[in-house]
Image (tube, rainbow, N blue to C red; front, side, top):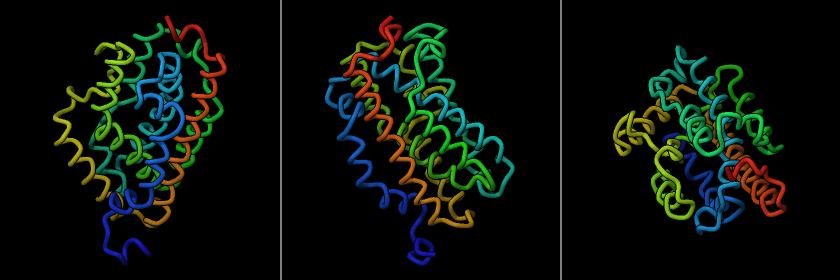
Length: 226
């Protein structure tokens, strides 16, 4: 196995495999708009709406495998970003957001990818947890400050990036990285997990680009501005 023979941790291997994709993600679509202060509330609401099912599938999948030797270390950390995103959407556009804000094809494709990763021993979920949770813990504070400034969002609309009820972010980030590496050490095919990380970034990039297109065409739902 290439990664095992190189003596690298899983998170190090994932970082190396997805580094360029990470840069691409920051340079394209809605994420680039957010980082440069150009995004509006419609785009951000669409992003949250389309990430919510992905987080639900990820968290349900990890919970389903919580007693396994592979995912057990990760399951000890209940990060519950799906619940946080739900609270943000309630605050941003009302309790009927699931009916008024659309799922986009790229969002559905991302959801299906995670559902597929949860099959079998669930080891491919390690890649999606790395992409989503370490991304939130590493860049969440930066995004939160940008959204506070550019979209004038308050704490009740930014629960996604608030881990204060769980613990110190720096400590949590270190603990979760260790849990991912423990899971990776138990995974039967680490190279598949690493390639799944690349697929996860590709899903995120596709969603970001689609949201930017929908918003630029003026086809995002009006309810997202309320």
